[in-house]
Length: 117
Length: 408
Image (tube, rainbow over all chains, first blue to last red; front, side, top):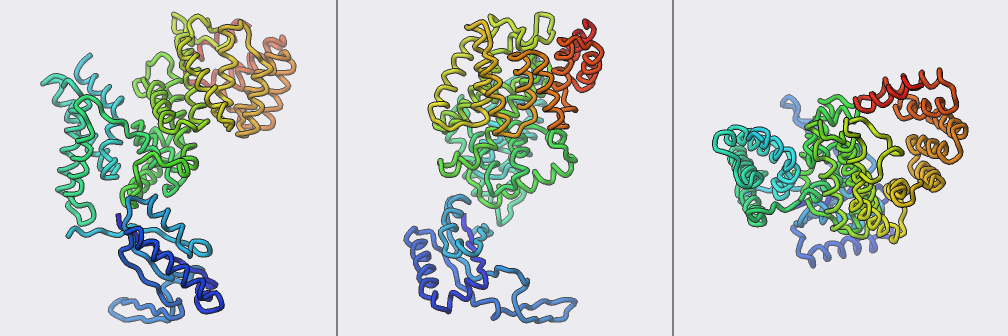
């Protein structure tokens, strides 16, 4: 099964990308992506810029509404995602708990809709 | 036995096995339930006319499999591709020899007990999927509206299907957090069958044996789990007494008055060996304590007397471990045996004051009635017997209590 490993980060996690912890932060995710690749289960992924860079658009009754910021103001924000292919949910959860973000933020594991051919 | 009656019996006995097998590959419990109920309906039509097939389970499996494939063809959504479902079914067919149907119920139970499933629905889900309990029956047991229970079950089955939960007995690092729910369901099934010792209720017949079977399978797959061994020992001890629990006229016989010659010695011996294996693992738990209590009762068969001191201590330990009002009440009953009715009455009264819920529990009043009678307080005993009778549904027990009351 294919899963998205969604990394929800705290404000402090986002700060850690740029302060004196930056090397540790990026090395952690680099090593994690490397481990996924070495296991042959990595199928994609991306890191996202912090929520301050987000813009949200909605079309309501034909009218376009554009607002500054992510779609919902919550404590932890999506900071990036990995796409993996593993046997089942337990295997996906076992990999998700190894993600560096699991120690301070939250990792959501969600199956992908798999299209046939 | 008529073909229709036989079809119903196979339906009851094979339900969980077939459902586990049909859903193991596709993970779609709801679709497997629909296919299985169609297959049972087809059997009720076909068997009375054409005769019961040599291997009814295999017949039902083949019919349900066709229904599953038909349903997959009709749905044909991008998400659950037909080819994948057909391949899954072919795989499981390859595993299934002509006679033996592999038992994948434990795998299904562990999937239902997964932490990814909402905690409150894990037990109901197992009762429905593995033992075929109806949503109404489960809702009644869990004090919920049937529609609310039905919705929770539907949601949980969607989660199992879509999240990709594995249908395996997990490795030791994961089974520890799930095994309690599995043990509780096996014991709930056993208790449901146990409360019908003569097998007069069609919905409960065979449940105790099924539960013991599942307990044995579990022990063989997770051999070093002390509580799984404890549960098996408990069930074996209780099952050993089945022939003695009713007399030749189907009247209720209380444990202390049972004829030990009627107890099934082979089951008691297996229970003792199993409990011994459990204690050697040095991890105490609820089921081991309950098995040890039953072991102390069983010792009457060869020592002629019960070690009430041990039973008092075991019930007190059980009460401390689980906070169970019933354990506290049973400790009071054992104190009465050890120290006399006066001490027992005081302990029972204290238990009822500490746990007011006990005052709505038949055995509380039956114990009070018995102790009052022994203390010569006839009027209080009569009132307590009436309270007990009002709370009992088993006719044999009602007759027993009524007789005791009338003999005052």
